[in-house]
Every structure is written in structure tokens, then in C-alpha cells.
Image (cartoon, rainbow over all chains, first blue to last red):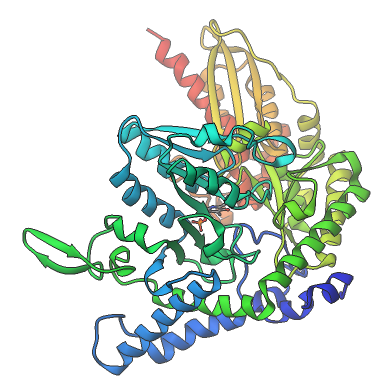
Length: 418
Length: 161
Ligand SMILES: Cc1ncc(COP(=O)(O)O)c(C=O)c1O
């Protein structure tokens, strides 16, 4: 279905869908209405082809052989690093892009390496109440060991962080960790404002870009954060690959995280010399095919244009919020910022009298996939007074017809449980 | 694909909308146990009044989806007035209906494991929950209250001299 959005956005979601075998195939006799990209996106055939091609033609271990096959593998892997770095505006991808297993591992790397080297009993760090567990639990684990204080920026009005006491909260803190976009509320967090205050207080800033980098143009040179992590499978890439970007001087000063091959320059029986960036943080054989796949994903996203993707999502969000309000009124609560411009492509919903689990079950019977649960953000859910929400999330292959299917299915759920 | 009617029988919806024994008994004297389903945040609070080895009264609190709430409500009706041994047997046969057998916790796919018509007839209204088996992710919802009741009853046996 070609809607208004397609003309404005500069790409047609229906054409995009054609590039995804999984989305072309019917699922249990229904056309698939995939509205769970915030949990994991689907991937276009070009990403699968890039990985296949690598395995069929160029696979060998990287950085190890002098034969040509190994050189090809190494250059594909390092080429992906360069491409992904360019995608987020990293000044020096060859040193600043570290491949990990996912964003969770990247954030654990920061906690275990930077945190252990810099945090002492009595120190303080600042996180937000809306963090995903991935940027919360690693710090809670470390705090219980070292004994530093964790302060929180709280949720304020209309799904936004309350920044009225930002300066005093970050005062004296050594690190500030923020999500760039809430995976529950969709809230776009003013990272540069927070980073400015954090830097004035002498803190290092780590940003969780898992829900942001896939959806909005990202430029780390103007973002304000010192470290930023994101995950491949939410941005058309394969599972098993995540990225930590960091300013070279900060990464340089951090001790290694995991030990083993690749991450050393020299090893003796009584010690070792760590490798240069970025390999210092890439112990063992890395996820080579996955890095190459993520490189192809970034090519695909760049082909559409991140500005056009953002435009498309705002259009879709506006349509969804209007349509759902018109069809369901007060029976449906949508959490998070009321203005589409203030949020990512995420809608957490609560349907009066219908538990999120039951809702997603009824939606599934119509081929509509949404996520039900606490979305790995229990402190936020507790603050909202909710045990579970049903979350619909959008990406490049979604259009108005998906929203219509969602709204119809919500109607069915209401009559079922009424 | 199994239809929604397999899952959401009228009895289930009725117990969801009008839960029986939705209360919290004073504890003590009542025994108390809480259960959580970390996946979806469902929680159940069971309070149990046991006298001379018999369940005199039972209360259910907490919150959750229609399957976990209705299963809890149906459970209270089924075990109230029963001896602890009878209640244990009811828990076992409910879990068997959910294809969970004491020997293995993985849901068994095999048809031969599902209860016979005669066994289902004995379970009365509880048999309405049989459709849950076709929706494997929901089995956890259905058994939450039953597992919590087991824990609560264990306290009764522990308390015995
Ligand atoms: C904001 C945010 N951070 C972190 C994660 C964790 O991602 P992953 O499981 O790929 O490490 C997610 C997604 O689940 C997320 O939405």
C-alpha cells in the first residue's frame, strides 16, 4: 500500500519489504505484520548474501595468516569496521570501533574495564531510571563489589527525563550512563545536554545507542558522549555482533577486558603486553562473518538514507498515534512522549481490561507480532506502575497497512475480553 | 495453528473477570507464598489456611494475564476443602495436563502423554485450561499458581512436628 509517507520519505516500504525474504513469506497462513523491530529487526537478503559470500569465498581466520585467503578475510573484516565507523561519524574507525557480541557485552566491557580502573569506594556514577538492564545491571554488579554510589536521573513529565536537577545530580560523579532512546517509552534523551553537564563535572559519558543508531542519523563527533554502544541485530545486521565506539584517548587508557589471543602484543610466562586499539579489546577469533554482515546492513541503511528513515518513522508514528486514538480512544493508553518528534519508533500500549500477554496472543492470531512484557527495564516499569506492556515498534519495512492491521487486531482483542 | 477459542474458553474468561477466592487471608495463622514469572512479570500471592491436614480456606492475590489469573481462580475452587494429599494429587494431575511430568520439566510433545477423556472429565472445569498446551509460552502462566501452592503446602508439612 503506497501512502503519503512514501512520497515524503523518499523510499517505499513496500519496495523495501521485497528485499526481505522473511517478510515476503506468509507466516502461518497470514501475511506477517512484523512490529517488533525494537527487539530485533529482520535483515535484507543482501546482508545474508554478504555473509554467505564471505563463507563461500573468503573465510579464514583474521590477522593470522600470510596467505591470500587470510588477507582477504582480514580486509573484509577491517573494511566492515571502517564502514561502520563512517556510518556513525567516528573520527578514527581503525582505532575507535570495537566489535563485541552485542550491546550488552559492549556495556559490560565499559563497566569491567573503565569501571574497575576508575571507580573506588565512595565514588559516584549517574544512570537514568529509564535504562535497559544492559546499562544498569553491569553497574549494579560492580557497585556491589566496589561500593560506589549510583545516582539516578528520574522520569519526569510526558515520558521525558526530569533534568531540573541535572547539575547537582552529576556533581562529583565520575561517569554518566544514558540511553539515547528508551526501548519502552521511545523517549529521545537529550544526550548532548546531559553530556555537557557531565563533562563540566568531570565525568565520562557512556551512551546506549541500541534503539537510536538503527533509526536516526548518528554522529558521534557531535553527540557529546565519550563512549557509545549499539547492537547489530536491531539494525538489519545478524545476531552475535555489537559495537563499542569510544574516543581513542579514553579507550587507550582502559585496561583489556577479556584476555586471550588477538588482544596481546607479547606474552611471557610472567606477564603480557596488550595489543593496540581496537584489537586490545577483541580477544579470541572475532565474529568475522557477523561484522561483514553488519557492514552490509549499514550499506543498506545508508542507501535509504538515515534522514529519510527518521522521516518515515515520524510519519508512521504520527499516523499510528492518530489512528489508534481515533479507533480506541480512552480504552488504549500509549505511554511515552505525546509528540512523535520526541520519540523513536516505539509504542508501548495498554489496552483497558486486557493484559499485555493476552493482547499479544490475540494479535499473533492475526499475524501481528508485538512484544509483551517488561522489556528488560524493570525499574522503569515499576516507576510507571506497570508489570507489562505490549510494545509495537516500527522500521523501514513497515507502513500504514501494518498500523491498520494492528488497530483492527486491537479491536478484536477488546471485543474478545470485553 | 490452534485457534484462540482453544485457549480462551468461556470458563477461563469467566474466572478471569470474576476471580474466586480473590483475597488475602491473615498470615499467620494462614501460610503465605509468593510466585513470580520473571518473563512477563505475573505474580501470585497465595494464603492458605490448613487445619488438621485439610485446606480450610485459600486466598489468591497478585496480578497477571487471563491464563495465570483464571488458572489460579480455578485452582482455589478445586483444592478448597481437600486434604493436603488430595491437593498434591490435584497439582500433579494439573501439571500432567500441562504436559509437565515430575521426571522432566520440558513440555512433552507426544500425544500419548496427554490425559484421557476420562481423566479430563475428573478434572471438571479445570479441563478448560487444556488448550494452553497448544501455546507453549503460556504454560508457565497456567502453572504459576500451582507451583506456588506447592511451595505454600510444603510450609504446612515443614511445620508439622
Ligand atoms: C536500549 C537497549 N539497550 C540494550 C539492549 C540489549 O541489546 P542486546 O540484547 O543486543 O545486547 C536493548 C535491546 O534489547 C535495548 O533496547
